[in-house]
Structure formats: C-alpha cells, structure tokens
Length: 356
Image (cartoon, rainbow, N blue to C red; front, side, top):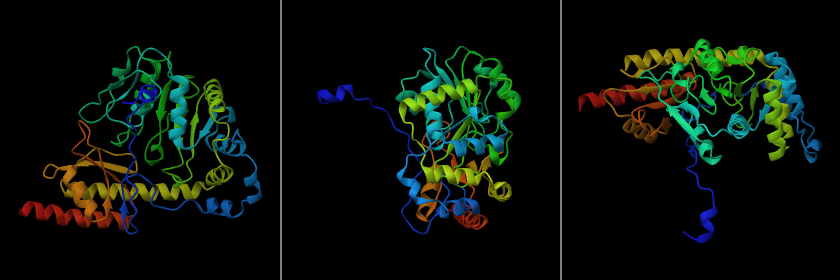
C-alpha cells in the first residue's frame, strides 16, 4: 500500500443488477416496470421549454413537492425529494443515524443499507428474519441508534403488517424509524397513515418501480415537518441542485395520471398471481410476494445453475451469493409475453433435468 492510500476511505460497494448490452434480452433482474411511463410524462417532455435548461433548477423542487403533497394529502413541508430513493435513503442515513448505538435492519434486505452504514461509519447490527423470511417485530425492542427496513422486503417480497410496523415504532420512539416502501404499490398498505401518530417515522418511496421512471431517478420521503427540515438542511449543505428541470416536470406530470398508474399496477399484479400458479406447478417454492418480483427456490435445481442456464438464453434474473439466500432467484415480473417465454424455458429445462 502506498502511503497516501492509508487515508482513503475504502468500502465494499453496492453491486447493482446487470445491465446487459445485448439488444434482444428478457430483462427480469432489476425490478423495472415492463410498461412505458404515463402518456402525460412524454407530453410534458415534448412541451418542455428548452430555454429553461440554461437556468439552475428550483432547489426546493417546488413543482414536484407540491404535486406529491396533493397526491398523498400531506403538507408540502412534509415532503422531501431526491435523485431516486437511494439518494433519499442515503441522505436519511447521513442525517438521522449519528448515535454510538448500532442501527438495526434485517439480515436479508436491500443490500445498500450496510454499504451506507460502512460509508458513513455508522455502527449497525443485522437482525435475522425468521424461517419464512419475515420480520419479528419484538426483535427490535432493544437499544439502538435507529431502525430501517424495506416493506415489502427486498429481495424476498414479503409484506409486514401495519400492526408490526406500529409495534416497532412504539418501542423505538427515541430514534428514527425508516420504512422503505419502494414496492408498496404492488400489494401493501403504506405506513404513511401512521405519520400523524409518530413524528419519528420516515416513509420513503420511489417513481422507479410502479411509475415506470427508473431512468428519471425520482425518490421521495414523507415525515414530520421537523424531520423533513433536518433532511433539507443536510441536502442544502451537500448539493442544493440535485434534481434537473426536466425530471421535476416529468415527475409532476406522472402524478396527474392516476388512472394509467392504477391500470399498470393491476396488470403487473395479475401477471404476478398467474405466474405464481405456474411456478407452483413446476415445483418452485416461494413466499406470498407483494412486490413486482418473485423470490423462488427449487428443491431439485440449484439457483446458481438455473441462473447461468437462463443467462445463456438471454433471460436475466438476479442471483445473490449470500448466506441463507444463495439457493434463491429473484425474478422481476415482466409482460405476460416475457413471462411466458421464461415459463416455457423452465418447463423444458426442468423436464430435461428430471430425465438425466
């Protein structure tokens, strides 16, 4: 090691899902929405006055903040926005997790949490999920510096009840509790309704999944006015102009397209439930996912083998070489046509494996 390397902060980075450069692939590895954004989003971009690009964007992201406040029936002062939910969550870690006590999150969850904790030098402790990959709310009734968990969880897709979330909030009123709801629109009830009772609650959501805008990078959070003010103070100390003009306009436009939003969600849910039935017929084992993906294992074929076989057919799914889940695949719900190609391949592959 060179002398100057001794003072460099070194972390093990988050590894995102593969973005294949091939033209003809079935991409079921990063939980993107298979359907295009709402028509109003496209129209807003065509109508955008490009002369505005020479000006800095509104640092308060007013047009988007007001649209979110209106859609979710909260005050604008209760809304924080950022460049994807990753940006929002990172700001929240930096702002709220400054205790000497460890923050708590599940041992199987979004793999960015431990990366941020290491990057910001936040002590942390992982809390094991049970054998069904569910949170045991009572496990969080211990001294800590904060709590964060995804609901529905990633990569398992399991949904925790508001009763369990409220239990965690009641037993952790002296720290901030972050509920990461990236997938909540696909089958859950948001913890947003608990905001009025718990001023230490921060609810984080995103446009990347249910609103088909992963490429725009729009994330947001709801909390008490006090929490949001603290978040903004850190944001303005870090980078005032985090969201560009086009993104702010497109995000506000997306919130006006409620019927399109609901239609798209219903299509994905219908496909998910149909695919669940087909996967059961093929012998796969999985939980009751309430997200836009399934987390599956098969008693006869190891997940890594199946992952490699699918990749050779240009079908990309997600494999995690991690304890407890290294025999599982996370499979995004695509269009019906994409899922039919996947199912056809699996039927043949499993049949041939049985005959060996």
